[in-house]
Image (tube, rainbow, N blue to C red; front, side):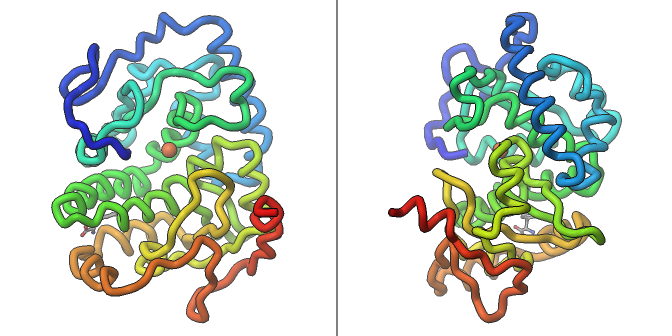
Length: 286
Ligand code: PHE
Ligand code: FE
């Protein structure tokens, strides 16, 4: 997201997609994927929601090397009708929503360099594909992503994409889900990050609060560091129901009259799973 110019960059198609050019990856590129893949799958066993791990299997992402988007799209298409397409970087919001609304997930094709293994500023193919694609094999989550894209087009017309972006952030990127045996990870920003996979679930610092659509759309987020609050859904069905079946237009209007909430705020009405110590965030401020 976050680009306003709508003219496609040189070499890109009108919808900003480019060929993945899979053959151009070097042995080093594939080795980087394999290294990240091994490290994350080890970390995520028992931490990620089962549907995420199943997605890796269903889509045969467990084979070594950076996945070929054409092959991945074939499998995904059979399963849920989604495709993965390559883009040169961030795409304009409206175009991003339009791709999602048409069941196309836009992914970066470059892979991070060894010195960026733990932190990078722009999403690479590991974040985009390892992080986002497995859940697109889940029919309910797949529907949520499409509905989100349609909602984005509406929000764009209503001038409320900032509110809607928060929903993406706190679900698709940084969401937690409640299971019988405790909280699990499903957000792509978490599952593709070694540090945050541990932090989001096990660290006493962040708040873990029950998902509440209106509250969440008032909440700011951090783009520079681990989140100070995570929101917990009960199931993907619940997430889909609470978003797709709600008309957001009146919500946006209501929210315009309410102040934003800070990244660490806990309200008396919140369902609190963890009251975070915020020790991590406070230490960074010193
Ligand atoms: N129901 C939302 C609207 O009326 C669209 C939406 C669906 C947004 C799913 C996010 C997720 O705009
Ligand atoms: Fe992402």
